[in-house]
Every structure is written in structure tokens, then in C-alpha cells.
Length: 257
Ligand code: SAH
Image (cartoon, rainbow, N blue to C red; front, side, top):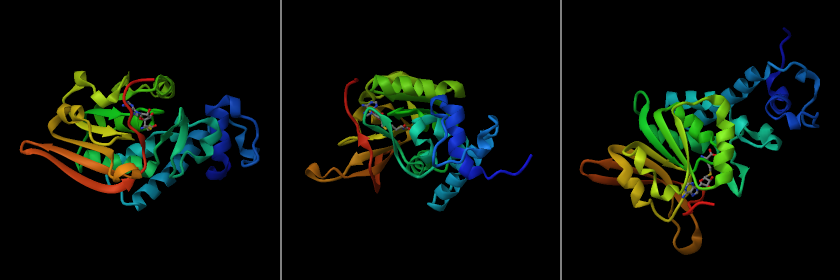
């Protein structure tokens, strides 16, 4: 086979394979290398590898997290019109006013969640399934993942996005994650992809002793609206909070819609 340049051919190929409706030629990607249909896997791998290198350069070190980020095909979770941005370090709209988080932030939070542990986490709860991307990455880092979403449209979308991956340890739930998911408790780890005024008590209650929670939380005074990452460790002596860098997440809301 002749050597092809993987990067330029990737976006057009992604469209052609993953999103048949968008398979028309586009100005950004020359049509030449798109003819065969099986090669895109390698191209996508190369672009993902590039993304992982950037994440590592930002300081993420956990080898399992980097491996998982290099494995999950982020382009399968975004709209066909955004596929060529899927491996950039940017958040992207996923519908219903919500966003898929930046890969840099996802990997940073997952590294915090794993906390230098060798091997996989036990049972994990994710609040805010969104398009299902982070849930897929988590499923490679944990024995069992429960992921809850309050918007029916996104819950359904995530189910559709994840179906081909056949992740048998990932359980998608439709409901209000503010109350956690008591049936799966206690959790070795809890991660939230939406930020509230404070960490709901239900999450702390459902965290195992020795477990860790990572979430965005409001830190701005009044209506300033700033958020930071919070790490909460539940120890036999009590709960320890550590406030980290500023972040920008969609709001944590109660109820379902
Ligand atoms: N991890 C997601 C990011 C989605 S954005 C991904 O990879 O795509 C955060 C999501 O949290 C949104 O879909 C939003 O609807 C959801 N959310 C907000 N409040 C929630 C709540 N109380 N329970 C469950 N999901 C909630």
C-alpha cells in the first residue's frame, strides 16, 4: 500500500464512515484518499495519539488514563459537522445546550479520580453522561460504571453512541444525579461533569470510605459564576476537601427533562 498522510485525510474519512449523511466532499478535506472504507481506523488512531501527546504535555501522567484516552474514539461522540474538531483540546456542543468537555479536562479529572492507584477503580458513579464520551473512557478505568443523565434526549443519544462499543461494565441511567444513585453505592469514586453551588450530601454519603470524588463547584461570590475543581477524599477520620484550578462546566440542575 502506498503511504498516506493520515492527518489531512482523517476528517473526511470520519464523515464517510461514521456519519453517512455527511459523506459529501467538503472543502476542508481533499477527496483523493477517501476511496477505501477500512483505513480510517489507523488515521483516527494517529490523530488520537497526537491528542494524547498534548494531554501528556499538559502534565497528565497516569499511564492507564493516557491509554484510555488513546483508545476511545471521541469522533464517534460528536455531531458530524464537528468531527474534524473531535481531537482538538476543546469542548464542543452536544445538543440541548450541553457540551462534551475538553479532552485535557477529562483526563485531568480522571487522573485525579484514579489518584495514582495501580490498576482499575472499583465501582464508579458519573453524574452527567452527556454524549457518553467520558463514561466510555471511565469504563476502561473501572470495574463498573454507573452514569446518570437528567436530559432524556442526551441519555438516548449516549446509549446510541455507546452501543457499538459493547461496554458491558457501563450502566446508563436516566434520572436526577443530584441524589446520586443509591442502589450502586458505596462507590470507590464519583465524578461530576456539571457544577453546582456545593457538592450534594447524597454524593458524599454514597462514596465509600477511602473513596474520592472529583467535581466542579461554584467558587465565585454572588453571581460571579466562577467554578473550580474540588477533590473530596472520604477518610476514616472524615472528609477532606481540596480546591484546585478554575474550570468551566455546564450547571448542575435538579429534576429531569
Ligand atoms: N461527561 C459528558 C459531559 C456532559 S456535560 C460527556 O462526555 O459528554 C454535563 C451533563 O451533565 C449534561 O448533559 C447535563 O444535562 C448533565 N447534568 C446536569 N445536571 C445533572 C443532574 N442533576 N443529573 C444528571 N445529569 C446532569
